[in-house]
Image (tube, rainbow, N blue to C red):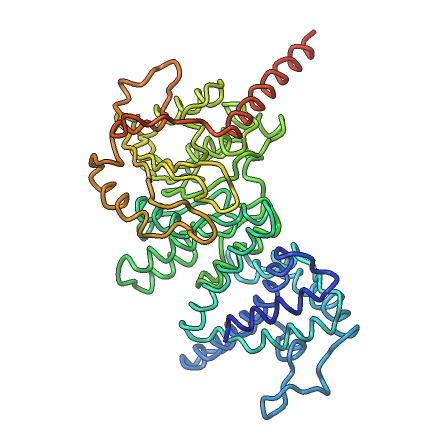
Length: 484
């Protein structure tokens, strides 16, 4: 039923002049789903309070509750068409009353880790784009058919929402940035293996896939006590996200998976000077797929010891700095990071190898990220001791990846098993850092078991590198001109 309801909602939004892409469909569905979820959550909390003989205090005022404005019902549980708002009346209520009321929660909330604060934050970032009150009425009636009361319902809804996020990749590059294949995320989380009490962080949180999968992994890791669940809910998962839509989707995704007040902040992580990071700011676990290919402004680069315009390289510096001593990380990055000869790349490899134990590199095939042609690797490292030996695993598949043949968990099963002991195989080998050239710190993936293998660089990677070098030269020239 849920799947058909989602399809019907999308069909209605396609008819609306204010919604033009899959990105809009997900955004507009999100705020409506959130309010329906909130209504069911309040009903559950009220029932629990009554069983304990306690008085429950409502979050939402009576006139703004779902049953008051969205889908009013009569005593028989049927839609009350006498009270039902539609057309211009519904538009005016949502835009002029409901949204301003919900925005105020951010100011009135006791603290940022409450669901009240998240309500205010979400509705401060959003606006209703559904221009027709009649289309909005259709959507509300369809969403009212959904329920979030049982664990089965919540589980099904969370999976369908994940599918919607995945489909955003078809809406263009910006949508694709938010989605990392779930089999890859699950594998990274398995290797990093977070445990109850760890603080888990993603500074490029996107749709919060890494935090959601870490939550699922930790829930299954042991029989949870009430205190364990409280720790997971409030003291475990942290993220930052720059883009408004991704921020909303990330919060919604975590809520649908059972984290009621996600600790996600809407901010540009890279505007934080890494020299200001103190011990209290650090995390036990970092899992992330930072955006690559971006070009950051000079003023942003000043926040980092290694200056570069490449967004992913700045994020990697941030992650190294924000990890606690002994902390563990799994970070996706372009494979050219391992071999680029420019000064920033060499300096960053040196920093990583000297300040962390880069124990594992997972080399992924092309098209792992649907819609993106770049090849990527996953860096697994622990902070505190320098790298002595790097274990490489090259994922060689007997098929080409794509929309009809995406990556799956079975593809990565051998990697997960061999990684436990970092054993040699046809697809894996180790490199002693003592044998690495200390002028380049080149860590190129060169499988010694494939003697005839000739690694040809992707033409786009070569063009990207030329652009990086050109930009570095331009920056140096501009700096020289400024001194003259």
